[in-house]
View (spheres, each protein chain N blue to C red):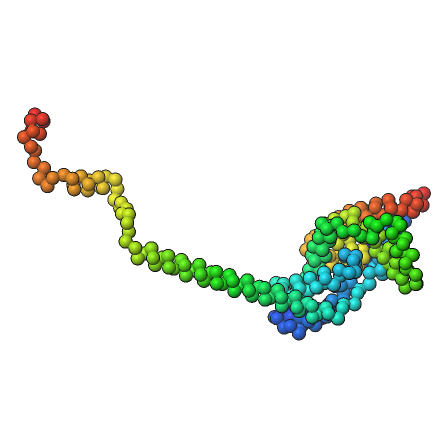
Length: 118
Length: 195
């Protein structure tokens, strides 16, 4: 075993600790695995795999449902008539257009107006 | 390596028989390491199962077959660390915490030589576990791998993927802390050593 304190004089307490570690190594030998070790391990692996499969199936269903719902919403919204009209021109263009609608076709000056501007 | 790379490759590709062979080849060694890391024989198999379970589900992440052993040790270290942390949280009563009278009664119950030997081993385990409780779980695992399992710094470097000097510093500090606790637990021996 590689020692970190290699090269310096050993403290008796350090040597004692090393002996204790060696005794610990001996007091904890490699245990013999029980007969049920492998079957239990495969049982746990299969249990986890089936849980993962279930979870994957659940998420697949969830994703499919979400995609279908989004598609339906898209179709529904695109098939409806737009209720709100949006302005596409600038403020001045829209003002001019509105003025043209409101103004009479022949903007002749009335006698009252002539009187006023005189 | 206890097995050839081909077996690891087959297990990685999902061959159940190869995986079973792999577990059978390593389980005794891994259970031994776990026994020394956690110091509780009754829980060794459970932690061992956890290691091989994690191995099964992470084999596909293994870059090459050559790094299989450090990989397996890393899984062992992680499982032991999780176990030790759970134990600390639970704060279970251990033999080291029992009164002197209870320990004497347990000793008296051990009549035969085999039982006495088992009692002696138990005392050694409890003493070392009590000493190791003076350092963090991570340092304790590192110290056991180095001082008791006998892994080299190079091997530890592969397991931890940490620079050798950083490992040396950490090991030295952990050992000093354990040594201090050991000296404090043996005042007579310390006096004899110092004088």
